[in-house]
Length: 520
Image 1 (cartoon, rainbow, N blue to C red):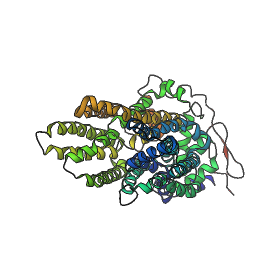
Image 2 (cartoon, rainbow, N blue to C red; image 1 turned 90 degrees about the vertical axis):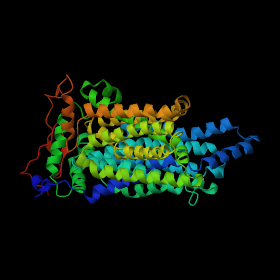
Image 3 (cartoon, rainbow, N blue to C red; image 1 turned 135 degrees about the vertical axis):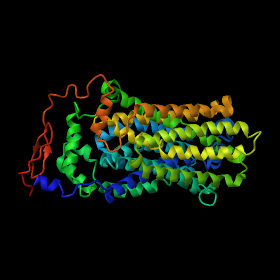
Image 4 (cartoon, rainbow, N blue to C red; image 1 turned 45 degrees about the vertical axis):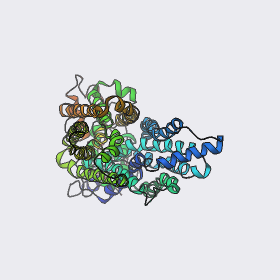
């Protein structure tokens, strides 16, 4: 019977091996590549520039001047963010057409194209292949940075949504750390190995492609958008252990009833919708704040700070690897404390730590001329910024984007948040050198103000979403709006279960289970 099939004797939401496996697979083959590609071009920069110069000599008989060489290398680095922006703009269309898991799987083709281009670039004598490969892998990162948290947020029970939602950010840190380790001179940090170093991204993606298709699609996508009850039940039973599946389907049903349409809302409709004004503003603030916090610009100063602290030049690369290890430790702390502490303490605390440490870097750089011990304070501030970022701001914004919106609005919300994230990333990389030249050591005060402002916004505007259903979260924000959330929803039809071969599909309306019906 339906009730016997859907309701086991015990009801609990445990972390199952299936949930953990799919979180690790999607993050390992997608999210980790984002972190890896952020750091992979730092170590072989000299060799890549030399390759560009030698190619110019072979083609034109003359090498590139310093300005042209810097421009080409800057394009190689920044084109990744341009690809990321394009990928983030495609998210809404892709997840609606292919589903959450389907988008992750289908986008792997981009990694194989990019890896092939970069891996064979030196053999073909083509700098264009390196640049275009970086652009293509940026598109993949732009897609996965939004889709992976969306997928994990939808398959996770509400009491594990925070933990699983931070797994991608942990793997982003692991990607940065992997690039730092592999970039050491003793491993792949040699001139002969840089094409292999850039193209290693295909290995995690290949493993993901072999295993992820065996896992089910998001149950919410299957039920609310595809109306496929049979597939939804199978997916929930796959991801749950001794769980009340009927209660989860009824919660999805409640969310479906609250929607005026199960069709995916466009970005324009999302912007104009007064019911989600505060949710949208929250996504805008935390995604822009994540990048304008100064975490990316920090790497412009890291080597100088370590050098001023008396660390010998040959040992700076190992010190940088140490900061990567700190990222992973901080990410682990965030993963294992978010379900106990909640989202707000991690993101508020993280931004506050970053803000105070940004002010500390400015103070230490100004005073270290007169007080030599201040150079060690600057190193401590670098560690503090990294730790503060990875504990909360690195992953919670993507998690909150999933939690603040219902099914119909979620893809558009991720498109907005992802686009702003990449635009802000590119803006920091472009503007920071000029800000550094004009403001000197005081440039980090700008990031300090941004971090403190975002922390204040989260404190006063964004409620705690721990252990809340998507409908409950929407209702908390609805109290801020003048328009009642349920306006215009009074005449919705009820979805009825139409049995087909003992299972069923959804007609227009809500799901009703008949306990007297039997399942063969």
